[in-house]
Image (cartoon, rainbow, N blue to C red; front, side):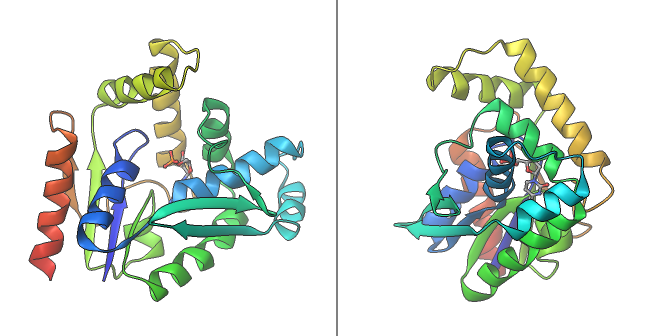
Length: 219
Ligand code: DC
């Protein structure tokens, strides 16, 4: 069984998907981490992300691996564990930028589909229900107001001692929404057959319960 969880940045997709996977004995796959890992690699190697040839060359020289250790996802790029290094604002913006590139999307699509073939997954991202797993048994579009999402992200960054201003985080959230929804290839949009869950006034536990309920109904 495959569960697709899509939605804009900061809607709580990853943390909700992780908890849902744990509760229901599924594997959680965070596809945003794959785009982030490629973005991190591009920054580290000064790759010109607007230049298709440079990105192609980077992909030819990139080995991306996802490892699951007690249901925790680790991301490795050319053997380097980048799991903790891909959660900065700089990497977020670069991931959104690089994800517009169709070659990058095709590069990750196979990896994502292979994982869904092998395991029962809760996979979260932007295009899981629409493109990656169009036949997923459960499709959820998790969303919340931009202000609420920025507030959650702001608190997360503060907890990690990152120096940030709320207004800048809100600005980035709005910019990323625009980039993700307006790109040509696999834009962020709810699948025709998804269930939209607005978590603006829901607690974390309520969001997890809402998705689990949909899974139980399909089982
Ligand atoms: O979910 P996230 O914030 O970690 O994702 C980072 C960026 O990666 C996001 O701004 C857009 C891109 N992304 C995507 O295009 N498709 C996905 N399935 C997942 C993420």
